[in-house]
Image (cartoon, rainbow, N blue to C red; front, top):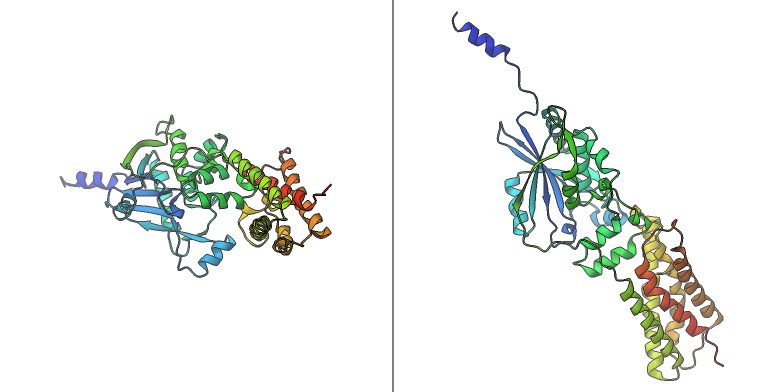
Length: 397
């Protein structure tokens, strides 16, 4: 009888609120050296204090052995998936690669922690794990962002959708790809006007490192209803040993213009000295390579636009500069190595049309309806196309 009140009080004690024993953190990993590591990475850490179990939810998993992986990659139909890892296994891998690791503990209410944990556990089931990947709008960072925003009832979206630092998808992509200049230039050529959309903080959160910075500014409601920072504390788990990516993309427009103008004068000089064998051979080789590179590149751009789901490559204005019409001139440029060769009316008209379309692209930059930032390609290729057209249309006095 004397023990009855003790049992009664134990039975009447309220059950702990779901999520009370959970801790939530945003984990961000710095850029690596491989192509797919250049943009960094992030994940959500759910730690259960009661069981001692820690789960790292990672949306960046892909498999080269996946059926039709490279075909799907080319068509813009890549499938990524979420995976659940142990941070004790994952963190050493990033340390070995020299990539920094930052943990941001988040101020979520118990109910929000439970909601997030349940959602991630559901999402990680094999039947739910895959998602359609897009490198700008549906990648590992946007999935992490969306999951946290869902748990917070849209608070992240509400606070990040308006602010902007004026960056675009192209600017972020080029600065992060700067260590691989050839790939950076190819990427720049392949991106259309979608990549020049001015990004809010919300949209620019496709870069994990930027999302890490943006969440520092997000406020949530504390237990007493007053605004508190979403980030409770920030810890550098590993400082990394790789150099940080540049803050801004390179601006090589003037260098491109210099190369384009010098190439143009060189082509004109060679054409006017066609009486000499070495000049004919050099001109023919140069013009053939230009036509081949521009023409094939233009076909690739058209294919990306019409045959793939790479939305960022659609409506690419560089088609007017890397013009497939250049391929029509290949026989003429090859034949120009002969001393008796003279440009036909077709060659004159086609070369003029190619130069006109390149100049037309230059004048399109006046209008805000054509926002694609392709100044580099205009500066490089317009003088060259103009020189080839001027050469074959040159009338000797």
